Length: 235
Length: 235
Image 1: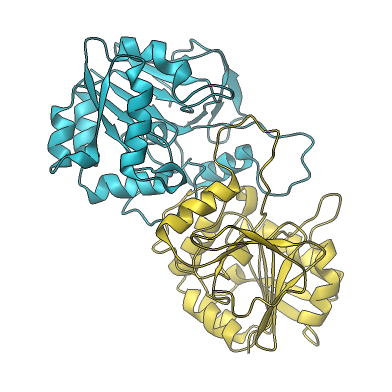
Image 2 (image 1 turned 60 degrees about the vertical axis):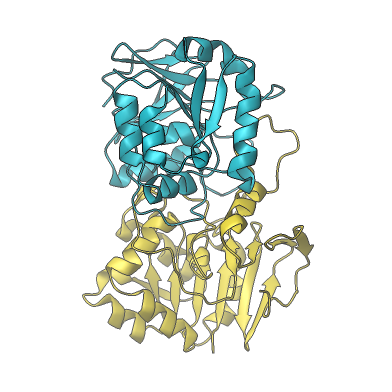
């Protein structure tokens, strides 16, 4: 039974890394003293070691130790044995490429579906969807597939941004990009604003945090949902 | 000898489609009465036919007829026989996928390198670089490769956006994304602001338009270049 938090972002404006999520983590990782960190997404290109130290520092506040998957010789075994798992943000193309290259995409899906508590932020949340195809990231590396963990029956767009009505910029808005996605794909997309997360617990998927989220369905007008909405059967 | 305009955007704020480029087109397509349009990028998911009509309407002002590549049974032959070519913007993943699926990526590269005048806007400009890996678009479809036309010896980021110093959003800035690209790739990237274009003529690549552009090199501090700068040997 999946137990997970899929958060739009790791960090809120004027806050420390993971600060707003710390209270949730104590519940997610109840009675767990050490988790496995997957630093593959390397935000800004930082090293696995630097990124793992950053996660460890934040988790110290929840009284939990952190070990990077890069410290293990057999990453699939490390996932299988982990008491809890956290995948940090960064570049989703790199994250997905590394999960496949290290042959752990399936191991990760199995572990989380079998109940290993999982936290994802940003790219780590994006991979919780059916595919990584609603990422905002640059294709800095060519992954062998766009298919991801499918912890929820839809796609996720983290860091969802509303169109700026005053913008003079002609690049596509997020909404236009998702509309283009639906020209070729049929699964719903949830636009998770920064501060929102999906809670997977007791066979339910629920929107959490203070904000509304935006739901996009193929050939439908997008609509808002309130925090607390049950998304278990969104499809 | 390549003759091309690679423009950051098709449209400027408060202007009509292609309006600011019309004077350039009369020179690029001198003595040409009909061009071939590649509508594969389908902005906002519009059909090839709708998109071709839109391009035709704009080109009417330059006295040039437009035919969509989709109207031809043999698209590679259509490219080979075209007197001029224009690839419009939209989704770069879709554009590149369709160029490969229709087996015209090589034909297009050859035609343009052999002197068929080429206009690209947005996604159509992105493919003028070594690879499409500095696109801003969503990976709505999985292309067989990220390699593109290599009309210039570097990568292009169209619709370049400077970081907003007042933003409270935690999604990556364009500069951070390009830095992540350089964690894994070595070619320079030129950030083309809306209103700028690259002119390829007489074996030279020159920045044109009213604005500066921003150049990103691996392990270097990004820097600004003025309009008129010769980029032929940027590498």
